[in-house]
Image 1 (cartoon, rainbow, N blue to C red):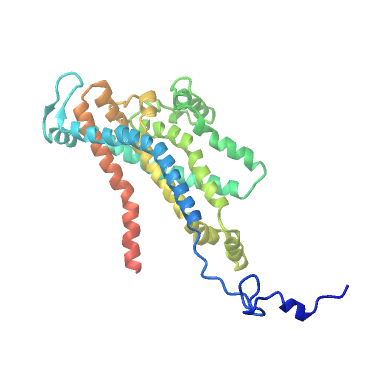
Image 2 (cartoon, one colour):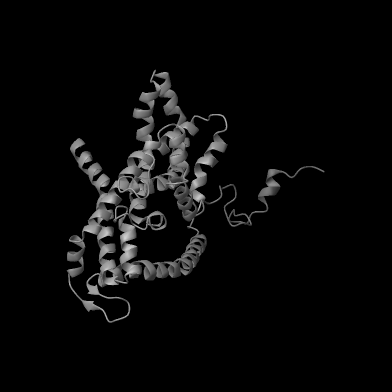
Length: 339
């Protein structure tokens, strides 16, 4: 059967020369108009986001309200009670700034503040460098570094009471391990009542804290070291930088944020700790181991002077804020001078 000719195809058009589709025969198809945005998909995305916001608000608002009630409300109440004389039984009596005046003139609080600053110095200048050396040692991937990492971190998870009891046995003047070791090596003249001697009591109380918390600092610094860019260290090695120069000029600047976090933890730990003092010495001998945390506990929960204890808490908080803000202010000042 012969294929249809061009003339037969033309016969399907109407007299005006239009095809059944409505356009002129032989003409190109008409261009479509501008594509409209998909409004339905946008509406769906907006509805989905709205539902997510509702779900987030449903979960976060109760937690935020509870946090505001327990923390912000407690802080405000503490500041308010610091201007009252109150023992939790009788009605609060407003005394103005008398609690703060008494606090400034109290020699026991002055001794507690000095002891706390001494403990802070030990944490910053002894514990933090020790944690850095341990982290750097493990970062070099020595044999058994995973096992050593667990051993170094183990004191962090041990109960504070157990650590205090352990070191209490070590410091025991008659049957303690420390005096026995000194006697064994011929240094028995150095043996003493480590917790009862005013010259050594504060250091003896601080050592268990350093031993317990060094693992936490070590883990933080080790994690930061493992995140160091390898190409930077390789470039320094190719340039002929020795180990000390690489540590000082490459590693330490890259670890500045982690070291800053550890400094913050050292300061806050020194000002909030009181359990070692409470369990090992009770603040003695002669208030030589009293720190701000134990002093606050004694005033508020042993003598039931809640107004005065609140004033102590306010002053401690202010001191911590000032001490923590010093590094930030120093960076701001040095940055402006450099600019």
